[in-house]
Every structure is written in C-alpha cells, then in structure tokens.
Length: 323
Ligand code: ACO
Image 1: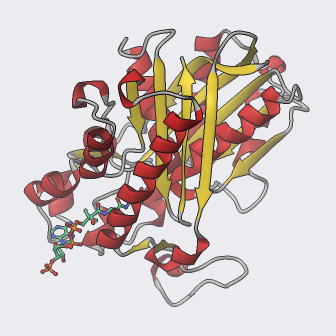
Image 2: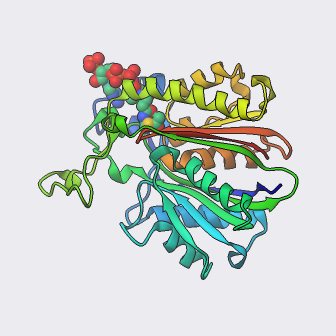
C-alpha cells in the first residue's frame, strides 16, 4: 500500500497587520465585539500589488526547503484558492513557472474555505494510485481583495495568507483517509454574487465583487457538518475520540473550533488555534495552522493529526493523517 506523507510544511503571511482597533476606525465595530464573537484579534493584509501567487510562492519555497525537495522533483502542483491572481491561467500554473518546475502538471481547486482539504485529497489520490510520487499542495488566498470594507459583518472576519505541504509517496504511513462533501443548495448563505459568466456590476464598488454571508446560519451549518465529518474520519479508521493527538481545524471562528473540540472531547491544549492572529484565511487557514504547529514543535513525527474545514458552496471535509 502506498501512503502520501507530509515531507515538509511552509507558510507565508503578508507583512501588514490590521488589528481590531484599526478596523474600528473604518467601520462601527470594536475589539471587544470581534474578539468575543470570533476570537480574532488581528489579521494580515496583502500589500498593493502582492497577489495570491506571491503568497503561494513563498509558502511553497519554505515547504520544499523543509522537505528537501527541489522544483525538478515535483510531479504535480495542486493549489486551493478562491481568489486566484487571474481568471486564467490558474495560480498553480503561475506558481509552477516561478518555481521552475517545468513540465509538471498544475491546477487550481476552488472549494472556498475547504480548498486546502480538497487539494490535499486530490493530491493524495494521485500518490495512492501511483500516478505521482512528489506533490506540492498549496492553500493561498488574498480574501481581503474580495471584501466590502463598509460591511462590518464580513470585513472583520478575513485575512490573507498561504500555507503549503510537500507530499511524498511512503510505504509505511501518512494520510490515512480523506473525506469531502458539498451541498450546492446552500449557495446564498455564503457567496460572492458576481462572476465572468453571470456578469459583473460595473456601477458597484469593486464591480460587485464581495463576500455575502448569513453569519448565524453559516455558523450552525458549519458546526453540524464538522461534527459529522470528524466522526466519519474516526469511524473510517476504527479510531476513538481520544486517539487523536492534534486537531488542526479551519480557522474561521474560535466558537466553531471549540464546538468541534468539545464533540471530540479534546482539551483546547491539543487544538491548534491561529485564528486570533490570522483571521479566516480561507484555503490558507489549515496549512498555515499546520505549519505553525510543526515549526513550534507541537506536532511531532508519528502523531495522529485531524485536519478539517468548512466553507462556501457549502463544502466541507477532513483528512486524518499520521504526521
Ligand atoms: N461589530 C459590531 N457589531 C456587529 C458586527 C461587528 N463587526 N457585525 C455584526 N454586528 C452586529 C449585527 O449588526 C447585529 O446587530 P443587531 O442585533 O442590532 O441586528 C449583532 O451584531 C449580532 O449579529 P449576528 O450576525 O447575529 O452575530 P453572531 O453572533 O451570529 O456573530 C458571526 C456573527 C461572527 C459572523 C458569526 O455568525 C459567525 O462566525 N458565523 C460563522 C460564519 C463564518 O465564520 N464565516 C466565515 C466563512 S465560512 C467559514 O469559514 C466557516
């Protein structure tokens, strides 16, 4: 049996930090409200001209260094994003060229905040099937570009950033199972209402590009779906709740994270939390949190790690792995 094992992780955050106090000067909000409802204290924001592809590149270089892998060794690049640099070519293709991974296939996956879990799942299938041996998986976003900075109900939630992993084929262990789900029927609870084919709205700010969300409904669906998908991962592997060493959840809201931890009967000391510093970086959130946990020495080789995410679509999923 072939497994895909995480050989190295990397991440990158833009330099500029926007605190809750900074936001309270732009919209009618406060550090108290944002922190109490979401756990977010600050987020990073890409500089003018700094793109999703730039963040992805820096995260990828760090992951490849950590894995000891050069660009010529990559068999595939899969990149989760909902804020690509261009409509086409894909950000994965732009990254492939910049890394010098000539000829290696590269494509984007758009599953909103579940983008990294989806990308990781695709990469895992390629390795398990023997079609690839070394794969770069990236989650990268500049979601702040999509925000309406007059809408306090959404602009306080998101940040920019990227994370990456290099997966290598391994005969012993690695990703044990992945689980993906979607429900397109809930589209309007969390979406961006314009696009190439539907059309843009030239009269509106940012041509109508914005995040629209019914926060409390999304909250309820997220908690329920995440409960189910972490149970599914445990069952698929014949594991109990107490077998997991680390939960690395999508970083959207501390209250959602705490609800999943409670479901798993996990103390918060074994849950990786970066939402306070990063906000919700969509596809970037899980690999950013994973890299932080690896580099701080929390996650050790041999430990069982459960990744999960929920996002627009709706999409949700999990990956259970032995690091
Ligand atoms: N500052 C101050 N007040 C605010 C702000 C703000 N930034 N935003 C909203 N409010 C007000 C509202 O206007 C409302 O006022 P009203 O009662 O006078 O009408 C009040 O606060 C309560 O609003 P709710 O939306 O009911 O607040 P809620 O407790 O649901 O918290 C939140 C909102 C934080 C968005 C929460 O619903 C949430 O986190 N939902 C999950 C959605 C999410 O995380 N989405 C991210 C993408 S999807 C994903 O990644 C999971």
